[in-house]
Amino acid sequence: MRQEDLIVEARKLLGHLKNRTTALADDIYRNPVTDYTCEKQAEHERELFFRKGAFTVGLSALLPNPGDWMTHDYAGVPILLARDKEGKLGGFLNVCRHRGARVAEGSGSGEKDFRCPYHGWCYGLDGALIARPDEASFAAAPRETHGLRPLPVVEKYGMIWISPDPEAKFDVDDLLCGMGEDLAAFGLDTYHHYETRVLHRKMNWKLAVDTFGETYHLQHLHPNTVDPLFHSNRCTFDAFGPNHRMLAARKTFDALRQVPESEWDVFDNTVLISVLFPNTVFTYQRDHIETWHMFPGNTVGETVMYVSLYIPERVDNPKAKEHWDRNFNLLMATVEMEDFPTCEGMQRGFLSGAQDAITFGRNEPALQHYHKSIRAALAAA
Image (cartoon, rainbow, N blue to C red; front, side):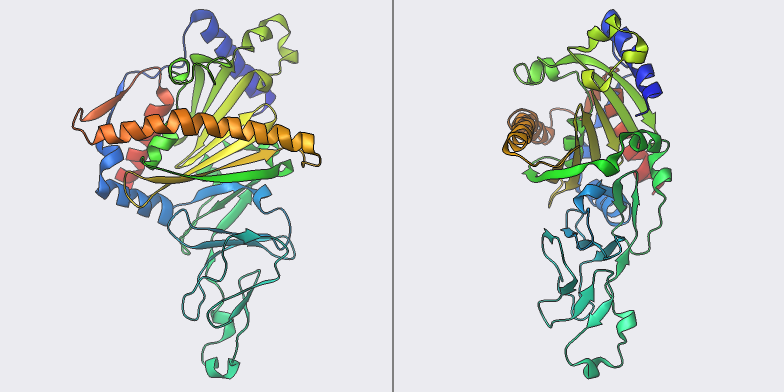
């Protein structure tokens, strides 16, 4: 965020702390339980958001150098991302054009080409078919038309966006609806990828996003972990099309009253949480960035997600590694032992028949906005 925007949000937060208030929606919102349990809706979401739509896979720091590559299967479509020798990032379907085998697994660096393990067809970092055994037998199938199928991929504001649909067209700024200025101000292209961890949980993917949608629960669910650090039920909210941004106050936030606005270090006393529609949570905390990417699992009641930690400087000594390992482990322990077990219990409760809808209060405007945006996108499609 730009400093002038941070000052505006900080004034709001100081007002909320003084008046014991928080950002409010106009009314309560009843979200149907079927939003988390309906197989028909789940299939519609997979098709619209994860097969035809565009989403961010993380910061460009995931693939910083020529020859870096990674596979991505979370959307249910085999994707390969690779940076060629000129540094240009390409996206492709991870499917050999001969018999359909995968040409890459996992991730790596320093690669020069991708060779299919089935019959040895070889593809360059730009997806072009560069060699194949017994070339003469395939004279009627020109190399020029048998490269890896390209996917639309865009790098902007230090992040990577892709669509699994080869025919898709998208504009990042259209997707962000004005949030691009926020991302640009972070200087994300200067960050370094530290680690990514993958989680599988028995809850709907949107329920995982909901975890980050309010601060109302802090004092109750996290009395010994998060609540001592942050004010519960105190935050700002701003919408950017289907995306949104929240700023939550640390317990140190009141100290800003003692210094002139020109000297405010807002980020040192807050946490910024943004949802990049439909499935990414972007979190900025003091000296690091986390991105959470939620995807549907095999059933409507399952999700697979990955969280990546990005840091401002490369780790070059054991003390720095210990610092970031400790930070990441604390983060994961909190969600793994407190947030997500609670959400899994909620998912089971949705199937009990206890209620037709859950209630988002006026003090949960981000949750209201997110689910209204989901429903609007499904209806428009």
